[in-house]
Image 1 (tube, rainbow, N blue to C red):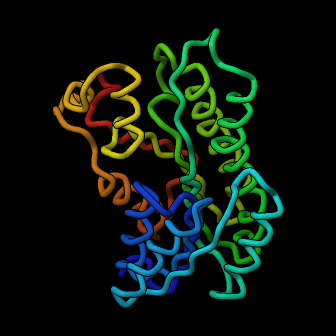
Image 2: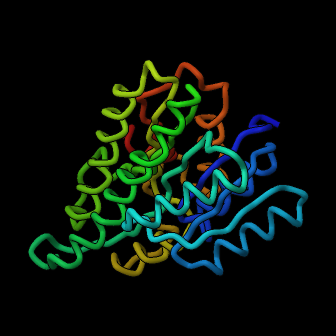
Image 3: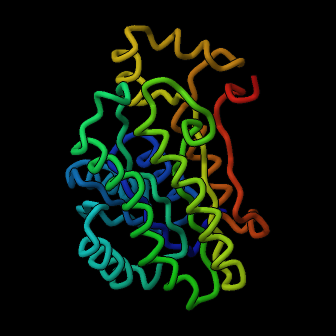
Amino acid sequence: MRLQGKVALITGGGTGIGKATAIRFAQEGAKVVVTDINLQGAQTTAQEIKQAGGQGLALRQDVTQEADWISVVEQSKEAFGTIDILFNNAGIYIIKPLAEITLEEWNRLMGINVTGVFLGMKHVMPLMAEQHKGSVINASSIAGLTGAAGHVLYGASKGAVRIMSKDAAMEYATKGVRVNSIHPGYIDTGMVDYAAQVNHTSKSNLADISPNGRLGSVNDIANIVLFLASDEANHVTGAEFVVDGGATAK
């Protein structure tokens, strides 16, 4: 029960990595607030948590809207008293040549992947600072570390998350709040299905990019997020954790 007594807020918790992490957190004793723009997905995750004997709250949230963040924080406090852990997981993926990216696409992806993370930190970290404890985990990507054709838009967003995490970690280092970023490679979710389709290849070919020869699983990511959320990582802040099967080590 590594998160016993803690309250966690997870965005994009209706599917994929967010859902797996929410369930993992609950198994470790956390009370979990699951948000998603798709309320039904968030409700399904929260229901699975409850059926397993945990405590989960599902809320609809558009992470690009400041009013939604204010509301989610207030509802989380009303339900569970505070927020000890924030996993800024919500994000979208667009692969497209630079010259073909529309301004509308740029603004939409940046709004979710970057502004959503900024607003989450803005509205949750001061609460954590008041209690002088808290852990923020921001979902970046190996696309925020290395370049790839067709990734100007997505890579820019994940690079921003990487540096924002370090900056926020420095600002709150003396306030008891830790901030770290995670950098997954290809993980077996709908995003990999999309990548395979856009690149006219197969998921098995994408798996071959990693030296260990497989796609990552959602639980591979949930486990590293769990570590960063727990007190075991109480001396870890401003760091980036790559979970890519060795892809960026080549």
